[in-house]
Image (tube, rainbow, N blue to C red; front, side, top):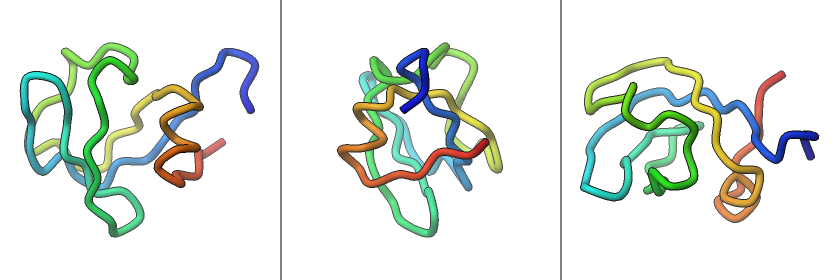
Length: 69
């Protein structure tokens, strides 16, 4: 676990967006990630590809997502 409580994750594509979450493709799987669990969610938008997103370690663990160094 990172000391900050956040982990960096490579998002292949942001496929969709609701008021409270992004639909992301990570490691070939589609999953909803709550905006409340992402650092600076306002800088991302639908259609973004190959972006590094900082999210809480908690949500990464819950979704089975591996962080990058």
